Amino acid sequence: MEKKRIKNSRYITGIDGIRTLAVIGVILYHLLPSYLPGGYLGVPILLVISGYLITDLLRQEWKQNEKIDVLKFYIRRLKRLYPSLVTVLVVSTAYITLFQRNLLNNIRGAVFSSLLYVNNWWQIDHGLSYFDRFGNESPFTHLWTMAVEGQNYLIWPLLFILLIKFVRRKDWIFYILTIGGLLSAIGMAVGFTPGEDPTRIYYGTDTRIFSILIGNALAFIWPSTRLKEEIPDSAKKILNTAGLASLFLLIVSYIFMDDRFSFPYYGGIYFVSVVTAVLVAVTAHPGASLNRWLTNPVFSYLGKRSYGIYLYQFPVMIFYEAKVNVANNVWLHVFIELALIVLCSELSYRFIEEPLRKFDYKKTWTMIKGWFSKPILSKQKAVGIASFIVVLIASIGVSIAPSSAVNANQAEFQEEIQENKQAAQKTKNEDDTNDSEEETQDTATDENILETYSTDIDHVTEKYGLTEKQVKQARETEVTAFGDSVLLGSTKNIQEIFPDAVIDADVGRQLYDSVDLLQELKDEDNLKENVVLALGSNGYADEAQFDDLMDVIGDRKVYLINVRVPTQRWQNDNNSLFKKMNDKYKRITLVDWYDLSNENTNWFREDQVHPTDVGRVEYTSLLAEKILE
Image 1 (cartoon, rainbow, N blue to C red):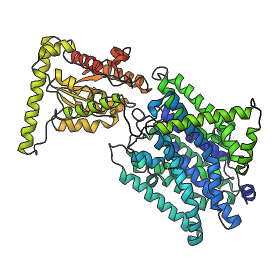
Image 2 (image 1 turned 180 degrees about the vertical axis):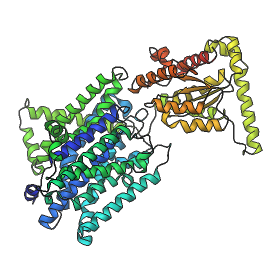
Image 3 (image 1 turned 135 degrees about the horizontal axis):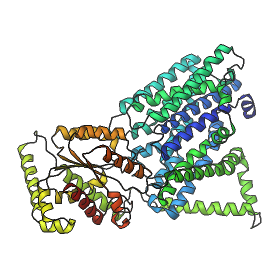
Image 4 (image 1 turned 90 degrees about the vertical axis):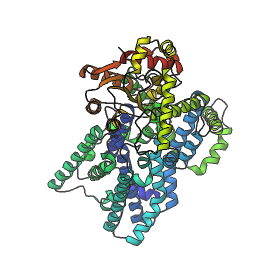
């Protein structure tokens, strides 16, 4: 049956071209998100391809044998996908155990959930975010996609059999799958809340399965073995036009459909999946020209290795960027990381994927027994011993890995963040709806804060290097400080100098989601005449976003603090943008935290971003000097 099934199948070389475009989009999205903000759309492209090809093969098998051998289907999928997945998990875990043990936390759950193809739900359950590379480092974050596909491979053959036996008509099956896809896309739209992290709907099988269902549905009305090579010129022209238009729309989506917008979740990703289905349909048609146009040695090479490229991208990025300052010479490091990803995928394809896909697992025991009879200096012995050592190290790492643990420094930092959040919240004007008891408590608290931070001027002048005149001036200066966790950590320091300051800061805050928050401060009369902006540590910013912030701020004086994030490639881009904004707006004063702190690594915690006690004093002192000039 296997030989007959393969014989009657048609390998569509152009699909490798589409795979190449998809995986390039995903990698560049991670490496250069400011240049390709829609590159994440490579994922639904890959899912549509997967749905179409798997269903097309199942249809061929049913037509030839009037049954589906579900067990053999599972075995084929495991032989194709599992060896590389296991290799990535084992090698990465061994590396972490030896060289980057800070990533051992929760790795047991990440590994086992990946092996069981439930990693997407495991990440959701643990509150992890796909969109927070800065605070959520893991070499296995991207394996949520493998989980969605794996769950589909488990269930779809059984559903396929039920649909074929009880629905029978191909057009009805197409409509059922299409409606299922629409319901999934609606679930994504309903579950999305603007301004909140969309990871739940981004990871969820229920809200992402529409891409696979679209591919499944296409296979029922567009089977590859039933398409004719000889078609009228007019039909060929229509197909080619549709294919080129769909390819153009995908490229445009890569460039403009930023994941920070609402549109992707309100139908944008679904739209891309439908457009991909058109591209796949035209590429699969032997009468169209697109298959030939998308077939070339480069696309064929990368397309065949796209699975490995996808698997190895995150481990390479995480491990490389942890050891190298990528903020400087960004393009050099991008090329190095790309080369490493391709190298790893080539080794995987040549020595893992292809050999084990063709390997007869019935001969496993015979091969193991034969290994012991090999000469001690043979290649087989060396490979076997090295593999055993790597597996042993990975096993030790998994066994000793803590779960949701924090070290003393992390616990201290978390406690500081919570304390500063509470302190910052008390700086805002409270809602008049509070009862009298709460108002009394708030007033007492405010009085305590004023008393705490106003009594010892000598202490403040000595601690922050300010003059007595500056400290007294600060007591009468209205300030609103708005920013991310770097600013949040200095809340109490800022209050020592500016006891009446309004402080609004949060962990993970970015420029693009700050306009509504600033407007809310403004509406509540919490936006004072002097506004401190401390954003840009968590991701790329652009000029249009900044202009929107300045529209809300109006004519107020702005003190813009630049960033020091040496492990992230957006550091220099954001600082260049802030310098440009300083030149563009006369009411902006640039506070050059990067220049002051960059050589003083002892001012920072282990992440080299959040200041220590010493760093917070320097940070606040610099800010105060600029405001009080």
